[in-house]
Length: 274
Image 1 (cartoon, rainbow, N blue to C red):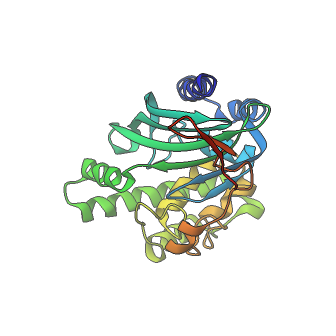
Image 2 (spheres, one colour):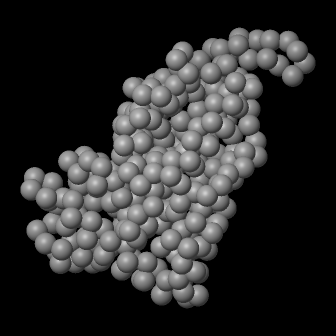
């Protein structure tokens, strides 16, 4: 267990060091691909979607929280504290409190609880994770209050800022075959008039918040990410999910989440088939 805790702390520390020190996150992302994540890496974020492959996960895990001039619902992590940790064989689980500074919301500083399960392969590379941001809806309400005391007014202001940022980023990075809207005005009109802002659990649905998550990625690989902010949602921002579908989803294909040989509290051992 000490080994896993050391690895987890090292990853957490490296993540924060990256956020503080690097202005070119894509260069850091390339170096991380070969040292932390396996090639068949799989990830799932509770209020968003699943993410396949080392490169895609690197872009989101490190890119979303990188300082940016775009309007973002996410901030930059400044410190962390591991509150709970346990490990068995190649599986580890933790609850970590991470302090974020969110520039788009008047540099509001907030703590966020993150629950995560991870597994490692034989080369000690992470090959899957399952993560949940606890009380995410509560946090979004707090952020809205920092904009305006009236929630409806705050939502309208955030919607306007977020759509403006998305469409400006589209104009800059989605060119030639990656164009999703014929003009900036068309982009603004569609997102303001035909797409809802979204609830806290709709970061993988047909919402402006989902597109707000993905528009930060456009500078990394426009050919991959531009469709995610377009009219169709590009397979990332679509209303093709149901509650039951989310709960019963069978996504992970790497090592099972339950160890094959689990120790009992009374010291006896039994084999658990998976």
